[in-house]
Length: 521
Image (cartoon, rainbow, N blue to C red; front, side, top):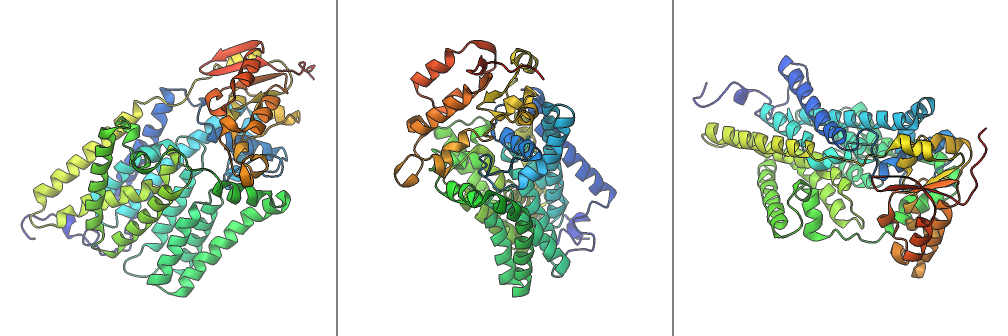
C-alpha cells in the first residue's frame, strides 16, 4: 500500500470504478449510514413543527389546498371543473388515502398523517442521495446525506403535503437507474426512469425541464432509442393521470395548469434576493442586506469550486448538468416562493459532496481531505441544528373554534383552518361551497381584470374583492386567517370586522356569517 493512503482510497468505489453492489445499502456500515441519515432527516423536518404549531399547525396555505383538493375529490368534485387547482392532479390523487383517513377519523388526523408521510419521503430522499453519492466514495456519501438532511429548502418542502418532495424522489430514482459507469442501463431501467419522470410532471409542470434533461442526456450520450424509451414511458404514465381530468374538465385543466401559470406576474424575488433563498442564506438568518449578498456569493463560490472538481469526470458532469437546469428554472420562473428552491436541493447537495469527497485525490491528501470533510460536516450539522430551533406553523385553538362555529357551512380564506376545525369533510358532505384554492382564483383566467386578461395585483382587483367578500359571508360562519394576503380594501375589511366575533387565535378570526345557522340533522 502506498504511504498516506487508506484501504478506502484504493476501493473500486473511491477510484470511480462501479462494482456490482455499488450504491446499495447492503454492508452493515452502509445500513447504519442509511439509517442514521434517514433518522437525521426525519428529525430535522419534524422538530420545528413540534416546537411550533405542531402537526395540526396552519399557515403555509398550499398544503391545505392540496389536502382539500384530495378530500373534495373523494366527494366526487372534479378539479378544474368544480374548483380551482393551479397544478396537475398528481398530488391530489396521492393525498386521497390521507383524506379517506380524515373522513374515517378527523380531518386534522388525516392531514397530520399526511405530513408525517411527507417527512418520511424526505428521509427516503436523503437515503437515495446517499446511495447515489456512495458511487464516488464513503466520504461523499456521508457528506451528501448529511447536507441534504440539513439543507433548508429540502427541509421546508418536506415538512408537509406539497408538490416538491415527490418530484425530488422521481429525479433521484431516475438518476439511480440511469447514472451507470461500467455498463448502460437496461431497457427496464430506462422505462421505469421515464415513467417516474413523466409522473413527476403530473405533480408540477416545472418537472418537464428535468424530464427533458434526462431525455437529452440519453440522446447525446447513448442512442436515440434510449431517449425515445424515456420520452415514451413518461408520456404514457403522464397520460394515464391527466387524460381523465382533462376530459372531465373540458379544457379548464389546460387553462389553470399551463396558461394561468405562464401569465402569473414576476414575484418580487429577483436577482440576489432569489439566490439568497435558493442557497438557504436568507432563511438561516443572514437577512436581506449586504451581509446576505456576501454570504450568498461565498456559498456560490464554494459551489463553483466543487463544480470544478465534478467536471473532471463523467458522472459529475451529469449532476452538474441537472443542477444547471434546475437553477435556470428557478431563476426564470415568474413567481418564486421559498419552497420552490427544493427543485435544486438534491443536485446542490450532490455537487458539494462530490467536491468534498474527491479532495482526497489531490497530492498528499490526508490532512487536506480530513480537514475539509470535518469542516463540511460541522457546517452542515450546524445548519440542521439551526433549522431544528426555528418553530414552524401557527397553532389554531382547534377545540375552541370547532365549539364556537354554529351548524351550517363554514367559509375560510385558508383551507387548513377548515381541516383543523374538522369541518372540511362535513361541509363537503353538506354540499357547501369550497373554492379549495381561494386566493388562487386571482390567477385564474376567468377572474382576471387587466388588459388582455392579464392579472392585476389583488389590491386593485375589484372582481376578486367582491368575490372573496361574498364567499366569506355566505355561510353561517367564516374564518379570516390571511387578511394581509387577501389584500382587501378598507371598506371590505370594515364590513368583515363588523360581523360578530365568535373565536380568535393566532391570526385567525371566526365570525358569524350572513346565513342563519342550519338546524342540525
